[in-house]
Amino acid sequence: MEDARVTALMQAYLDAEYRWEWGGEWYPLQIGATAPDLEATFPDAAEFGLLSAWNPQSLERPEETNRAADATLHAALRASGAIYRPGFSSARNRSWREPSWVTVGLPLADFDALALRFGQLGTLFCRRGEPMRLRMYHARPAAVAAPFVDWLPAVAG
Image 1 (cartoon, rainbow, N blue to C red):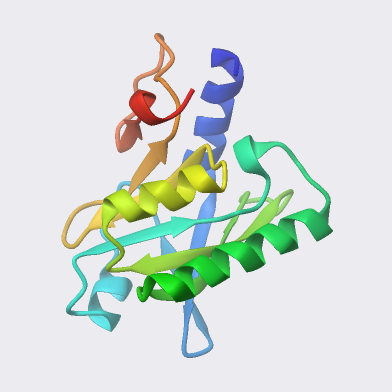
Image 2 (cartoon, one colour; image 1 turned 60 degrees about the vertical axis):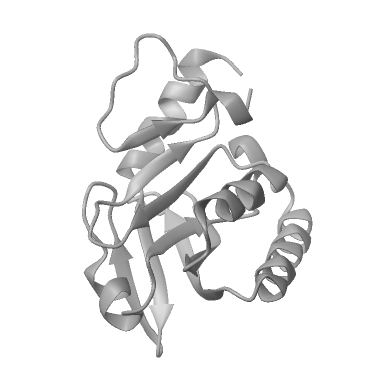
């Protein structure tokens, strides 16, 4: 994947809105900020993430294909025994929107494995009391420096 495309997608992810559902209400998540609503709702959880199975590598696929992948991710989350909640990611102008899942207490290695299994380029993850971070499953482009972004070159390409 070209560095310019990865950089543009990273910026789109940083600019996006993220939300998760609990009790019929939608709560925000923000890269670079802690997740107080998640922490208060799940006081025993040590880590939280947001991932999707839609549009691997941010390449648009037919809705039917995305829904099937989402059902498979949902089944994997059920099988993991972890707590999870519906979520979504969207552009601030709503030009794109993707259903997602918020994970609660899913260990980082398992979270990353699911993200890679479903071909995701970017996810969100944080530990209790720490700011939410964007995880990019790609080597960091040479000219890119952004706070709250983790690059994982050893597990993606």
